[in-house]
Amino acid sequence: MKTMAVVFALLLLLARPAGAILTILANGQTVLPGSELCLNRGDQIVIEITGDGSTPEPLEGFLFVEGPGSISGCTLTYPGTASEYKDLEEVAEAMEITVEETLAIFSAYAERSLTDLSKWVLANNGPLREPLEGLLIGDIVFRCEGGGDALLTLETDDEWTTYPDYTITIHQTAQTRTYYVDVNSGSDDNTGLSPGDAFATIQKAVDSAYDGETIIVQPGLYPGDINFLGKNIIVQSTDPNDYAIVQQTVIGSDSGAGELEAVITFRGAEGPACTLRGFNINGYIRGCDPSVDPGVQSHTHAAISNCILCNNAGDYGTVIIWCDGLISNCILADNNNHPILGGHPTISQCYGTVKNCTLANNTSGIGIGISDAGTTEITNCILYNDAVAIYTGGAANISYSNIAEVVCEDPCQADLAWGPGNTNVDPCFARVGDYAHGIVGDYHLKSQAGRWDPQSSAWLADAGTSPCIDAGSPGSPLGNETGNPRNKRINMGAYGGTAQASKTPANWSLLADLTNDGIVDQRDYAIQAKDNCDPGGEKPGDLNRDGAVDMDDVATLIDAWLQTTIWH
Image (tube, rainbow, N blue to C red; front, side, top):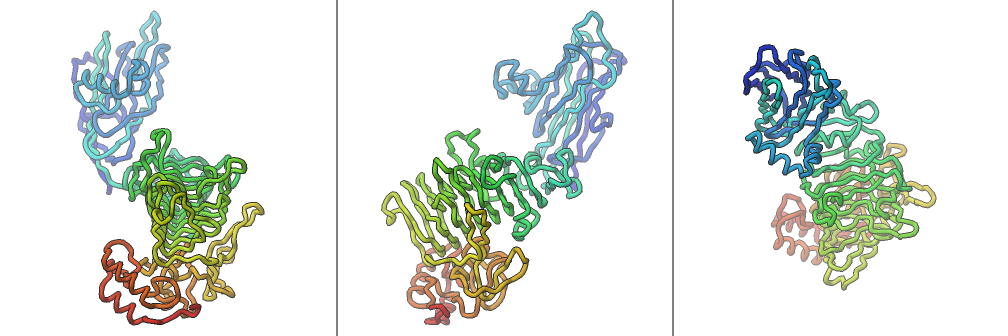
């Protein structure tokens, strides 16, 4: 059981006249000396302040927070015409100084290191001094922000009488949680900590989550933008590996026109542990927040996987920008550039790895754009009617990908590392989309051995087979591809490594055919020998995929020497 002891120690710091009492309630319960509650990072307690009526107003006071915690919200129930409650930002604004300067001044006054505060006044400014009785201030929310102790102090400054000051000592733990979101049955007033008590919006879950925590989103339509706020969290659909669920878990309420599309924003501070996976996104993703980084100095390193970004306007046709983490198993197709201003690259200024993605028929004609002295690695991808564009200062490492064209502003010899296994063939998609005529594409690869058909939820046999089947890097794990002796290598494209990867016909591929030319020969051996001198990563020469190119892998290649595929 997730536990945290919260000890409410009521410290009488000043002399207290008989009968002059303010009382604190936490979650509706009167706080007494020695009280304990069980809380965890992210938990909230609702603070109320009541009076016994023995002393009249005016009364001025403060709530001080020291340590990992914050306060928000307030309902003033005392009817005094001069009553007020100001949070930290409002206090700083009234003093015409910054929040940091305000905390420094009050920290010196209170002789403690404050992290948050609020100021309140209970006053009527009339000829009669009304008694302070009943609920005076309610709905103040204290939120646990991390591990360690936090102190919440109620301090009064009253020239007429002296009330006791309360200090609440909160011993916090930081156990990770899973939050749930369900637009159909949830509410943002819920805790979000179970499917039956889910939030209604993804942003509410992001606001509530801490580093290392997970957000699981039920199928449904989720309008509105999302900001990750720099948090290293996982946001995913209920099953990112099931493209039927991915298709039904939709972020953004409009596709194509752009006016209702969603913008998913990372702050740029996220690391590889931050993950967005398993969504059908109507809109675009940006890996930096210009509102906090106008110069776009920081790109996110969050991972984006198993997402569908199709038929969007995006940012002039761009649907992923400034993301330097791993982008994998995503379909980016039929996105529409601006009719007057033209189109931008579908993936732009992303200097990480793009792996097992399908980019097709995006109207800008540029699938991946690389610039600004950045380098992008592209592997196991299919770009159909989409080029890779390398602008001045950019560079690309491309291997085991089906790409028709690479265009460069500078001589490509300096900017392009053209690795092994690349092809330029018709990928033989089940159905190519047509944005202008409303035809939705199906980017599964045709196969005589079987192709998954999402409409019938069944495997269908085609008359021909895509040359992109079993054409990915021999060193890449098969993942969830259907296991059979013919399935030797991962497929290119977004469905490679998934349960919906098209099946491999007999004698279609060779594990040791590192060049993808249909025969195992000295050219394949040369690549494997180079891998032996360049350890690390998923090397194509690592045929048993154990992380090292060694004699076992050489033996596998020699055993297949001069073998050919049926299409060689």
